[in-house]
Length: 162
Ligand code: RP5
Image (spheres, rainbow, N blue to C red):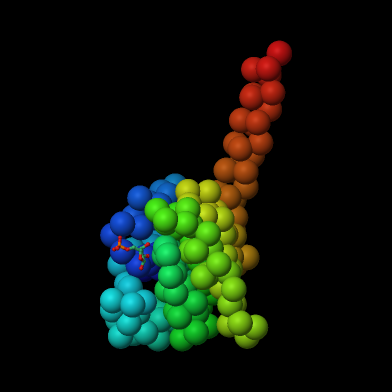
């Protein structure tokens, strides 16, 4: 199936976090591709990826990076495909560095920034799915089912307190 979501990350070390993005996309049956592309170590490949994304059929790009996390912003600078940035938790600054690097984009070039780490990686996939669901009713139905299950779980948890 032709991928509609591109999941990229700055290093293989980001996979521990970005695997949660891919798990959710798989659960929602959304075709995606995954790739390591580094803003600093392979800048030419990063620009090529961004420039070709739209013509290759990608509808959303999810970019995870840590530390000096320039990947989401630089990709966003080279494409009109919406970019969601996932701040990966860094060892030295617990991902605050990643978060600030990704979220503080200048006006005119947006990156939708999610939370640091696993929750952010999970929500990046759900946000991508919600963007796709604007035009894809099957994805919307799968998202609604997932939301209903989450709500049912919370109701069950409340029962456990009694
Ligand atoms: C960033 O540098 C990557 O996104 C990664 O989070 C961080 C560290 O990379 P490695 O040194 O583990 O390859 O570019």
